[in-house]
Image: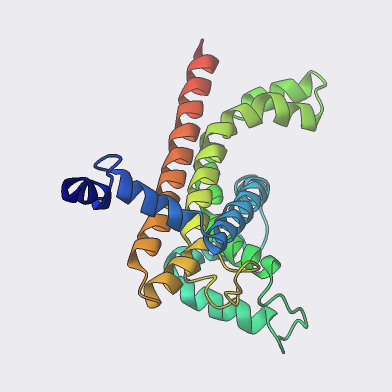
Length: 246
């Protein structure tokens, strides 16, 4: 009977990695963690989509158009690379927060999150597309236009296929940066759980609360998601380039 009792009291081990896996799953499926992850991925996806359109348009204007102040605009594009992101968050909060000069208050809202992420990720698409536009031969565009093709058709059939790999590269980098951004959003988001709290801020909060395992679990999940997106877009780019060559 003593032996039976000892057997019953002995903990059952499903596998050597089971406790760690269960702890990881428990941390990443907490309601607050899930809400932060959904918000992070959603805002990052919208940010990447806006960057794909706005970044391509800005790169097009910088390469194909001439206007006063072009050099200044071209330099401002690189500002997020040189500016500490926490300074960007403070600036956005001062301009578009309570009492801002533009009387537009987006502080502690999801729109404020989107603006902050757009500011720090826009250069990725612009700088990825700009060199391709500079090297793009315009003779095919002029030939198509001389044959009566509309500008929209020229862009869709000639320009866009050449720009697509660069756009995808910039969008992927912008998405990965937005997923892990902390400095630009920590102030303007307000860190309201289930409303404006993104995963990076959630991780910081877990570290402050002494829950290192929870912070590590969500961090690993973000890393896996970003790496998976990079691999998927890279594979699509290689397939598309090989397909175009064939």
